[in-house]
Amino acid sequence: MTEYNAFLSPTGRHLHESAIRRMGTVVAKAPDLVSFAAGYPDPSLFPWDDFREIAAQLLTGADPTVLQYGPTRGYTPLLDATIDVLAGRGIKADLNELLITTGSQQGLDLVARVLVSPGDVVLVELPAYTGGISAFKNVQAHLVGVQQDDEGIDLDDLDAVLVRERGGGRKVNLLYLVPNFQNPTGRLLSLDKRHLLLEWAERRDVLIVEDDPYGALFFDDVATEEETRPIRADDARGRVIYLSTYSKTLAPGFRVGWMVAPAELADRFETAKQSIDLTSGVLDQRLVHEAIQRGLLETLAPRLRNLYKHKRDVMERSLREQLGTLLSWPSPKGGFFLWATLPPGEEDNALLLRALEKQLVFVIGSAFYVDGNGHDKIRLSFSAPTPERIPEGVRRLAAALTST
Ligand SMILES: Cc1ncc(COP(=O)(O)O)c(C=O)c1O
Image (cartoon, rainbow, N blue to C red):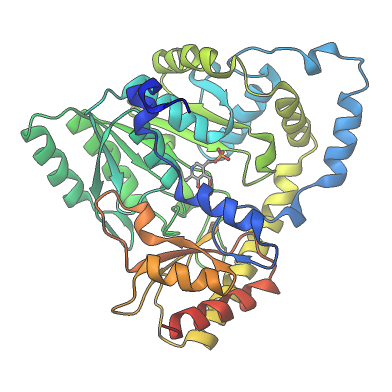
């Protein structure tokens, strides 16, 4: 048999697999499984009827550009519509600062390719989104974690880590963070910290990569829209690269996201994207654009917020009823995730193995830590399972926790 290792490039050898994607394979194989693993949106609110009509209109053949190659920057009417979406979030962006991406995951990959050299430090939260970790690890970044408190990233630790790393002779240019309902903790970064981060980035000459897929999904009993104001909205000096997506507000199957960056960098990202996919799926972009034109973002957003809030409530209630005080967690103020601390002596990998025997899957906490910690945590996603299945999953979790 051919030995392929010798064929691999340094990048090929260092590729970093996503723990969450791996879980996805498990889920696909076991139909009775309850999955609290992947952060998938609830498909019951995908606007099927609208998309069926839109697709039928687009695919009559009257407009040949629907199935043609398109510009790398993105379909111009979608770029214009996205500028309006951004304005609704307080962000004033020009066309030359905007790029449609194949999901915001591609935005992360572009940032990593264009801005990070092997050995560069990228600062990430402890814990951090695994897809961000993978994108930066794949370009052989040296990932260094920064502590968080209840209000998000710890600014004292952030500065101390930066000073330490630069003192050790390393290049530190980037901070990656998810300020709104962070994946995996569900935390919301306070407005104070957002302002202080901008000052810090300017003072320390760092760029902030702000990844914001969940901002629209705040729960109105504990969070307000104002509290989700992106850092980029107050960025007067071009310190922020802002990534977002239509995955969580329309549907992730379209793979349509976007990035906003200072024009000079946006040009670089566009050039890098040319060799990856030439353009994000043209039909996908057209479908998303028509959906926005129909006002679907506005009509869906309150329904999505209510549905996920309800699911959070169901999960929290089930956890309290079935597990008492065995687990503790900060109550999610939005988004898809509940971040639970395990009882003393319990370990995430061992618990997952016992849970799998009971047909339950979640993501181990340590997958989100770049410093080897997190074995006392698990991420429970309440977004995809139905409200009826959530208590069943929690029952299985209770059984796994109490079996040895
Ligand atoms: C924090 C974060 N960033 C990026 C992504 C990728 O989203 P997209 O579907 O837009 O690629 C996700 C998806 O779960 C996410 O949680």
